[in-house]
Length: 319
Ligand SMILES: C[S@@+](CC[C@H](N)C(=O)[O-])C[C@H]1O[C@@H](n2cnc3c(N)ncnc32)[C@H](O)[C@@H]1O
Image (cartoon, rainbow, N blue to C red; front, side, top):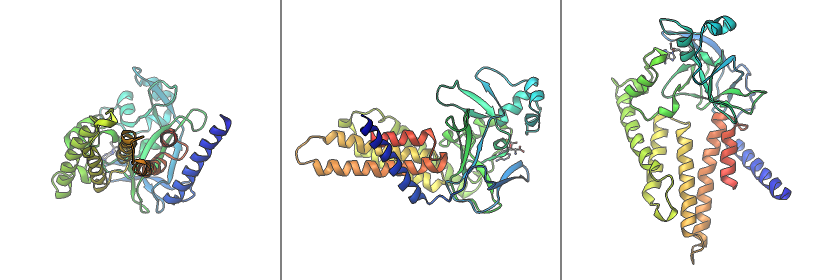
């Protein structure tokens, strides 16, 4: 048993090592001052790159100022106990709850009740529907977890660093996205939201198509291997192409690679043990690993190698 465990750990290590090599992430530690807090016209404070930032660069691992569990509300006590909270931006008319709603991040992790927290540095990052950075809660960092922000695209010096406040809703229309962010009190004018321009209209069409593909793919999620068809694989290929055209790197692209890996896994199950299929089985395993590696690279890039997401992908690959 011990030997088996060690060999899985060694496989994880080896896989991580080669993913790092492929990614070529520079040796920068989080909180190494790769960004500064600045201002931007019409959007208040913001994060700006201090240098050329490569995808996969850790920008910050930040500790929570305070957290609020579900059903609790932010009140005057929070404002007076945490002066840094009072300083954060707030849509009019300002109340502690509205300030909290416009600045909090979700923190969900192992054995933790779902809750939301205030992070004074990360609360200065503005939103774009085509972000160049990704935030996540990592419950395993520090004593009580950290909010992590990683670059997911190249960010030139002085450019604004932007996250998507609601990245899971990327397939909604511009109006639906706007509605979902109404408590932030701003109208997004990123290229995807400029539906008065040709690129904005193209983005709207792409996202509509991505939504159709996502729902078709979701219907096959728990499918028996004997029922799966090649159409699902084509849907997954089309989805990843559209995501890349749209500049959406995480988490949906990683999910589409996981979908491809699962498709090849099911395909292997479908033909397992059949006469004359040994080579095809091997090919399926190879394709499954290729797609999993792409997911792993994106997980490392957006969450860091020490994140639960990376561990989950590694265990999918080797168990
Ligand atoms: C989490 S804070 C971000 C930092 C904020 N700009 C500040 O000055 O502290 C969220 C607020 O920033 C502003 N904001 C964020 N993204 C924006 C965008 N794309 N366009 C306009 N305002 C934006 C909105 O006022 C929103 O309520």
